[in-house]
Length: 290
Picture 1 (cartoon, helix red, strand yellow):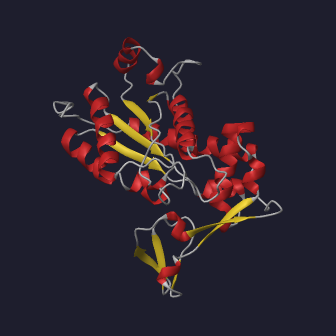
Picture 2 (cartoon, helix red, strand yellow; picture 1 turned 90 degrees about the vertical axis):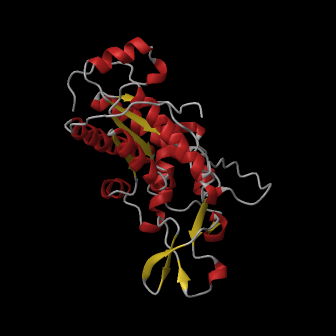
């Protein structure tokens, strides 16, 4: 890890003056982390809508401090069409169409590259943000020469080891542990634990199909998960209410351990990325107002 970081040094560009940013860049800081969130309903009706963004920002903030690089404010909205629910249902999801979402990422990237950053790392723990950004990673790299990456994914071996949860509860326990660690008393853990949900193939597909948690839009057929469908979440997620809280492995301490592990892993990636030689050949942002 970097050893030249001053304790308490501000690294969030939102809180810095342009002179402060310029001075640090002149000292060799060419990397910036960009947390991307989502405002969406989850399978458990007590999960905060912005939890994926809250986690993404927390991991980026901690990793930036460990690796001594800049980070940006959270972009709170992302790509979540399957969480919109039914008309007038009031679920609260805010969705960016994929064209808008990609344009937002590209504009963020172009802005930062224009100002002299050579390495842009988007960070998100909403999986659909990651998979739908691939076009932007190609576009920014091929048009500018900059190093552009997306850091995402949460069900790592280390996270599984920390939680000790069964596969069917892993995603739910991850969300609960993160909410406990980051939101404290603002998170209604009692109501959360009184709910769970089942993941299943949409009933209209018939009995030949099934679905597992954590597989996105993939459907299992004859033992293979190589079929992908566009589905609303209410078609494959069924909330369940319980009189007694279900056994869970989530705790605030485990949440803090996971934050430490994820941020350390991201910081290690950033440190490795510092070794990569990058030649940016185009910083022109002439179509910034089109």
